[in-house]
Amino acid sequence: MDPSLHIVCPNCDTTNRVISNRLVDNPRCGKCKRALFTGRPVELNHSNFQKHIGSSQIPVLVEFWAPGCGYCQKMAPVFAQAASRLEPRVHLSTVNTQAEQPLAGQFNVSGVPTLVLFRSGKEVARQSGAMDLDTLIGWVRSRI
Image 1 (cartoon, rainbow, N blue to C red):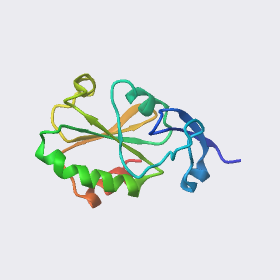
Image 2: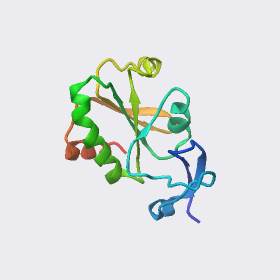
Image 3: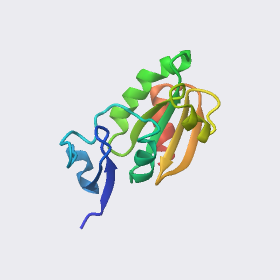
């Protein structure tokens, strides 16, 4: 019997149990019936951050960014492309550091963009600065 994993819905923040070998079968949320993997980053804030980071049993990559940051603007489409390539093995999320200053402070984010990879609620890797798509995907895969 295949072990199941907890996956947090990017739409309604409900924790779902999915059999690990069924992750690639486009699983849907048991509550809202929408896709658990959307191929795009999920916006996190103070009310749903801990749920996604702490309850998800797949790695979660968070991009801390700011609207006025030129490097962040260049990184945004790359990060979105990475989401479609890394799911369902990794969930990608974003945090707007201007709107969520306490979260940025909690994780000592002093420059943007900053990528933080979480596994089982704990930080496992961090990288500051913009990256191209291949570098980003390679960086993530080497750490999961």
